[in-house]
Length: 170
Image (cartoon, rainbow, N blue to C red; front, side, top):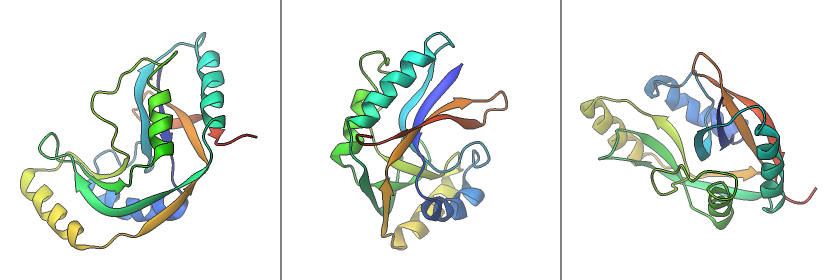
């Protein structure tokens, strides 16, 4: 089965991202706005308990934190993806690094860029127009993060939560 690990921001942040995603993101209906901590990976039912135990350890080793979103950015020229850029902070880097070692295969294809995707799979002209407009808008979003989720992919390509992990010592 295919799993992934992500942070779902608060409803307020999700609503702001969804206001854009519903128009510009072809995968809008498959998963709510999120910060990917680990790209999808395969594991089986015998190994999932070990994965869950390790995720509890990782979550316990990082205290809750705030994220800051101040602008829109892109992955151009690699893809026509537009995202809300999350200022990289040590806690996000630490969680991401821990999810690439030990029992977790390092399946990260690119350097870790914390973000929330708001548009993807756009034609170049539409992409340029949207990027230009969104870069003129100001973003000053602060959000409290106190958990991350282990997700699994359903047969229709959508993702749902398998388990939630609270940050910090319980």
